[in-house]
Amino acid sequence: MSRSFVGNSFKILQVLHGHTSDVTSCDFVSPSTIVTGSSDKTVRVWDWKVGSGYEERSSSPLRAHKYQVTCVRVSPQGSLLASSSVDGTAIIWSMHNCVKLYTITQVNGDAIRVCSKAMSIMNSFVNDIFERIAAEASRLAQYNKRSTITSREIQTAVRLLLPGELAKHAVSEGTKAVTKYTSSK
Image (cartoon, rainbow, N blue to C red):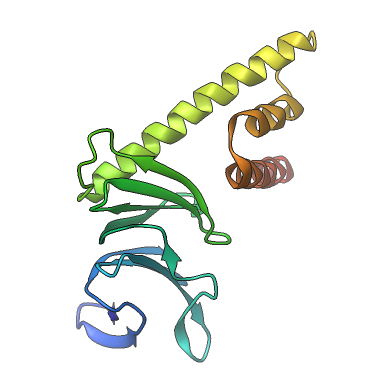
């Protein structure tokens, strides 16, 4: 059960029903979306519906952790969700369709209990992936005898380096970002 509050008066707006144990973490993606994690091992995504309040997404709950979820955090762009657990994993999910994209496991198997730890792992993962994509795209550009890396080389590098759903998500989000940037000029 999760409760939503407004202002300094802490008036209960709505009680969200879904989790079967304590809610251990919550992140507001925007005024219209909330993500919650629980001791029941699940992550739930709630969207605001005019007239009825927050409702759970049809693709929720997200189930992949073996033990209690300790933290949920959404990336600044709102496209990725990281959840961490006592089971020693941080899972990267797509916020678009709630598909599990990647599981990161603690080397020593220790629990991930702090949100900053999960975000640190996610940031490290993202930085590592960006470096690998840039290096592969550079090699592809050299192979094609180009001095500039094009979006074609970047998309090919993404498809070569990232597994299945993660590659699809990255190419889709990258294309949207380029289109948005180009149209703003």
